[in-house]
Every structure is written in C-alpha cells, then in structure tokens.
Length: 270
Length: 183
Image (tube, rainbow over all chains, first blue to last red; front, side, top):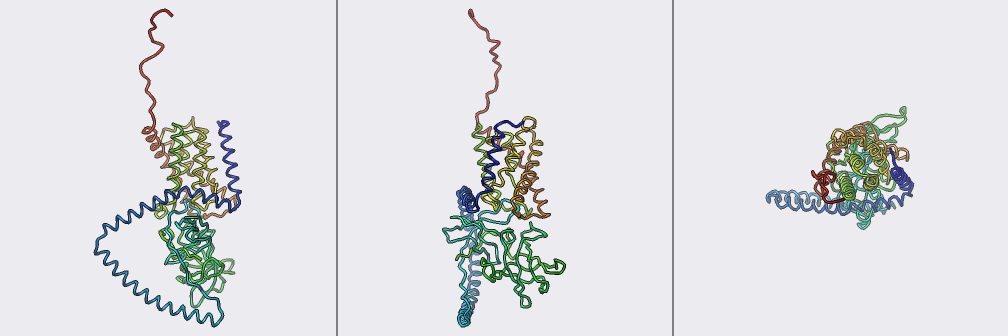
C-alpha cells in the first residue's frame, strides 16, 4: 500500500521532471553543464592514473624498441616534410590563382588535440565528451576529426569539457559529396535507417536518381551548411539502392573513423 | 545506519554513472552499454525508505543525463516509479533470496529503458532505434538482473563492516528475576 510520504515523493519527482523538461534550451544546457561538473574531480583522477600508467610503461619499454621507433618516425617525418613543401607550393599557387580570379581565400585549419574522457551512457545516442572547453578556444559547432576522417561536431562547449555529437547521431547531419571524377553528386549524411545501432554505417540520402554510384567511392564533406569545411573524408560507399519508386537514390556509407575506438580527436578552432 | 546507507548508495550511484560513461569494453564487444542504475534503485527501494529512494532516483538520473545527450531530467521519473512500485510490495517480497533479487533486477532493468524511451518519444525526440535495440535491451536487462544480487551482497558487507551490529539477546529474563524484600 502507498502511504502519504510515497504520494508526496511521487508528486515532487513528477513536478521536478516537468520543470526540467520544460526549461528553455539555454537554461537546460547550463544546468546540465553544472551537473556534469560533479564529475570533474573523478575525470581528473582518471587522467592522472592513465598518465602514471603511461609513464610506468615507458620505463619498462626496451631501449632498442624506442630507438627503432625513433628511426621509423624520423623517416616518416622526412617524407611528410617533403610533401608539406610540395603542398605549400600548391597552396601559394592556389592563393595566387584565387586572388586573380577574385575567389575568396581558404584559410588553413587550426586544430587542437583533445582526449576522449567519456561516452554517452545511453545506448540511443552517439556522443562523447572531450577534455577541451571554451577556455581552450572551443566553441559550439566546431568540427571534430581524426587523421582518418570526420568524427562529428561540438554540441555543447563547457568551460573545461565539451560534448561532441558523432556522425550518425540524429543531431549531426552532414552535407557531403562523392569525391569521384565521374560523379560529384551531393547528398546528406543521416543515421542509418536499416541498422541505426551499428556505429560503422550511416545513410547517404537525397541523391538524384541519375547519380553514378559505385561501392568504394569516397564521400567527403561538401562545405555547405557552414559547419564543416569542404574536403574532410567521411567514409566510403558500401552499397546503394533506388527508393521512392525510382525517384532518387540512397547509399549506405561505411565511416572512415572507428567511433568505438576513439581515444584522441582534433577539434578545429576558429 | 540509515544516513550511512543512503550516502553509500549515492556514492555508488555516482561511481556507476562514471563507470557507464568511461568503460567502453562492453560497447566494443557486445555493442551495448549496460545500465546498472535500475538494479541499484531496486536495492535502495527494498533496503531503505522513500527518502533514500527519491534521492537515488533523482540524483542518479540527473548525473546520468548530465553525461548523456538525453534531455536533462528524463531518467529520474522511470527510476523512481519502478523503485516506488517495488517499495510498495516490500513486505511481501522475499528480498533476502538471491532468486527474488535477480527477478526484481530483471524487471526493473527491463522497465526503466522502456519508460525512458516512452517519455523521449512523447517529447518528439528521435533516438536511434532499430532491431538492434532489442539486443541492447536484452543485454541491459540481463546485466541489471545479474548485478542486483551483487549490490545486496556488497551493501550487506559494507553494513556489517562499518556499522555496530545489534547486540544478541542473552538468557536473562526480567520476569524471572527474584525480588528480595518487601514490595
């Protein structure tokens, strides 16, 4: 049997829930940020323990392994420097041609490395938390990527931590194009309708029925929409089909980044 | 005793939410993150009063939502309602039996995600749902069920370690006392 305290507690919880769910978005975000601040000490502790474990592992690493790694990295560095020199030449040429044609200049990306500290505990969202915030120059909607491709965008930037929604979350739509000589078809990345819980696949929709698609074609950001700059790799076409009684096509895209294995990401800063 | 138990449950709820946000191995192997708060609420409902249940549901739910994309406040009510229904039948449940604990954990872990989804869908929020969600639900339910007897055992051990044990009754009976002298 319910007693009077049960009814009072139920009323309190129901009213509190309604108040929180009816809060304006800005107030709700601020409240959420304040609550997530409760976890800052334990996140800090977790990072310190991880750093200590890393330091301990460096101490036991054999010296000849380290020397071999340094040699490999030195060689890679030289190759990358040569490529950077060539890219620098292309950039200057590109800027010169753009200024002659009167096209707006493209600025180089400025990025900051962030560590992934937490993931969404609920199974029906795809998001994670990183250890950079507004005090590090991070703002909402900043694109997040790795060397393999696009990860998502910053949804909420707190003072020291930020929430990132991943590609494939309903809250992260990306305007993309197929980077192929034959087809520069544009479309929109949305959560996978056939396997929404599979975080390796997303849907590429709004493709025209005449789009020339093939499995393996690379999909990159188109630069439209104002959030993601053009040219970031999103993934590769896995398969495609005609829908809407032949009116348009839809493809499934295998993401370039393995979202489950992310440990560090790059965040673009303005 | 009660305040110590309440504080212990709240600390464990905080650690459980942190564990769910940072421990990624279940997600990598099974494609699912387990939810241990419902099983903790079962323990709170059967071992404590309504204040502890309310605190665990509200604070646990808020902490979970703060690290999630969930609208803030959405997880409190399902946790509380399930806990309240169990507390209502507290006197009729054999709560010391592991099998009963397992079944209660199973019920709570199955009901809480469903109720949360119901509220989410009523708010016109579109979460990621599909056939795979059934697998996720099954794993969450099973993990919650298995964890419930573990909570009972752990908190029982904590209570035995940190609280004064009740004094056992001796053989002395006041009604058998021999009274000397005149009354």
